[in-house]
Amino acid sequence: MKPEITVSAADLERLEALLAMPPNRGRRDLDGLRDELERANVVDGAVPDGIIALDRRARFREETSGREYELTLAWPHDANAADGRVSIFSPAGSALLGLAIGQQIDWQTPEGHAIRLTVLAVTPAG
Image (cartoon, rainbow, N blue to C red; front, side, top):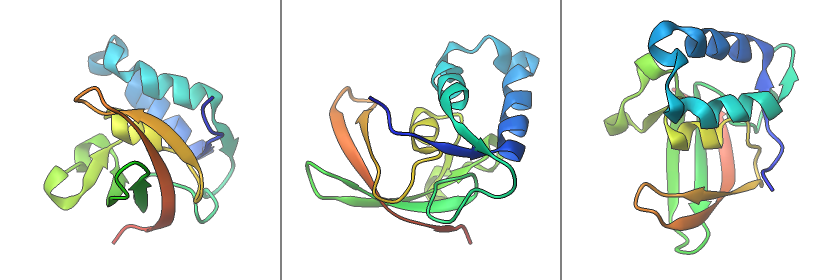
């Protein structure tokens, strides 16, 4: 079962507009993001502190190895792997969207490994 997620109405509106654009409309690789948005708890105004949202930095732990990572969830045009800015259009970005501190998600890596991630901290990017 997937954990509950929270998204702001403004981010939802902007993401739905991006997904509806002709270059993105038929992209099957964005179906995971579409599914996440459909099940999201939508809030007016800003997403509460402690929840991963666009332009927020998240620290999380891979439970099997204990390794910790930090990523900033970014709009597609702002993504930059070298700076740790992961696109919301990536599988990792769409999986992290809306998760709160303490929540866990099971994730399939690009190499096909199943891992469990726990959100440890969420801060504004910058």
